[in-house]
Amino acid sequence: QQQVKQSPQSLIVQKGGISIINCAYENTAFDYFPWYQQFPGKGPALLIAIRPDVSEKKEGRFTISFNKSAKQFSLHIMDSQPGDSATYFCAAATTGTASKLTFGTGTRLQVTL
Amino acid sequence: DSGVTQTPKHLITATGQRVTLRCSPRSGDLSVYWYQQSLDQGLQFLIQYYNGEERAKGNILERFSAQQFPDLHSELNLSSLELGDSALYFCASSAFGHSGNTIYFGEGSWLTVV
Image 1: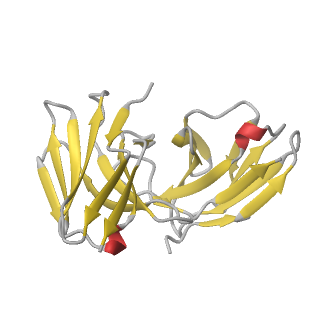
Image 2: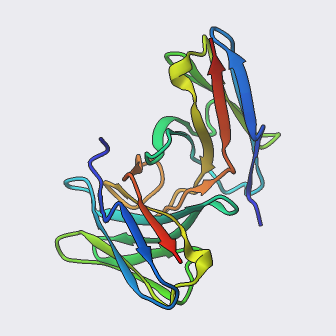
């Protein structure tokens, strides 16, 4: 059962444009929603994360928008740069003594010049 | 550099064999996680240890086992290997075991089963 659905699978954006990646979840017990960035040959690295008590979180050019009622969250990359070209994964987890991340299927972003 | 160290980086082995993947977590991190990344299954959680004890189990096959040692390093043992086990295996660590703690990933161990 895929608990976190991510779209699109791939995305091409021009330099300076806005990249938008969407995720939807099913498990209402999820209460931690991180986004990870992965470059080829590297492990995923935490980019930004949000909890459901806020609707938006911004860190530099990266913004998470969260809609609890729709069970959806999205990553916006403003002023996209070629160095942002990577695979982005959304994830979700539940609070508790055990913690595991359930990942989306990933979005391969290419930022062109 | 996340501070999570995995060895070996690449491994080629034959079907039916057994391999051990090793992970050293970030200094001070008590929790270790193992994930499998493949083209068709994406990033799948396998197992989590916290201070030497198993804390959560995911889609880990019975042929696979893991442990966390007193010095907090962890090993993932894969036995009776099949072609479908070829994947990138990530170890990750966090300070504690509960969600909200940043989970740091290593660079992975590429396993190819031939």
